[in-house]
Length: 239
Length: 239
Image 1 (cartoon, rainbow over the protein chains, first blue to last red):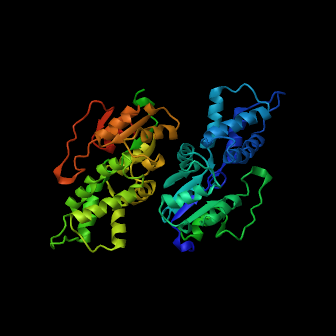
Image 2: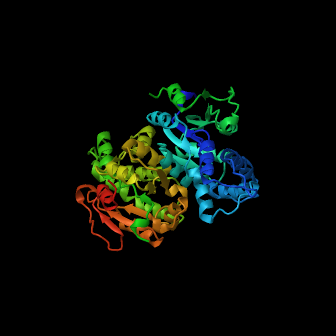
Image 3: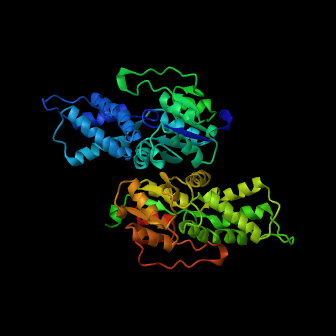
């Protein structure tokens, strides 16, 4: 099976389609949080600290230490830990709830809406994210992302890279795994998809973690390596 | 809670948003099926016979006589029974598979795309159908239905009117049931939603079953009674 047989494009979302770093950093900066010693909290550092708790928290779920919960709930747990780490006090319950939902208000990368719109003309385009369905749906409205379908780890009650997530996309659309192209800015996500027989496209997102940069070297195991979603549309012949 | 508190509109699809009768009848007529005695099969009669097997088949699943399966698979079972009933032979496996997927190729009612587009500006609009996710997604692409999110009986592994389906919408979006308005052309579907605390809007679709017509009398238990989806958009203040 090669790219000609692909019918469905499944997209990782955080970092691949939307810029979580600058979106979270901006909202945190706007809140004007201060630490216990009176110093201002840096929005970018807080965003990185929050996201750094993501993988370990999902590992705890996979290991059975935490029971399955939608990512909104896990984001709240991680936020509480971050507020403690930065010694920030005095946020009201409403403010914490609103801040947790910053992950519903992430801005797309400049190429995302155009790229997806072009790809949608020829393929079924869906999410395959660890974000819960409600989060992904509200984000799509906020950012103007034209998904055909919102699929999530929530559909199978397991987080990526559990094989059930990738195989679930193929089963949902009743196609062989090789007719699904997984699109992500993370090699480990793509490796998980590849082990299940999906094709894979790596998207360079050198600013995913902000100014500190990110290694975006190709992995020859991927079917495609693209600069962004406009580039993906070009490579797949979508005008 | 009244209509001012509504955040999510959940739509029944077959009959409410799309015209299954004329779509199925037209494809069956185009196939030019003939019965064993050489007479031509009437597309409209075949469409009604196929759909008449729907409720009893879902009852068998609810009763545990049939194990859960996506509606695509149940549509195929019902098709095989209909072909036997009409004494139609000689369809190839590919033709049967293609015909089963006629339910992915249903045309919208003339008001549906405009109505949904207007409602989408203010509300989260999602499906809540017994159709499986793949079926609903492909139908949305075919018919141009601008869903924010495709939710299905498949998400909870139960068919409407099981309470898990209606409550699942509220849980997915983390809102109270009374913030969800269920929209359907069938009073029994709306009664199921109402028992779970959702608000309800009945849509008149007098031609759902073709020329034989349908009683579209109001039930005062519903929150709203509307002519079509343009009318619903008016009533909810969506320009």
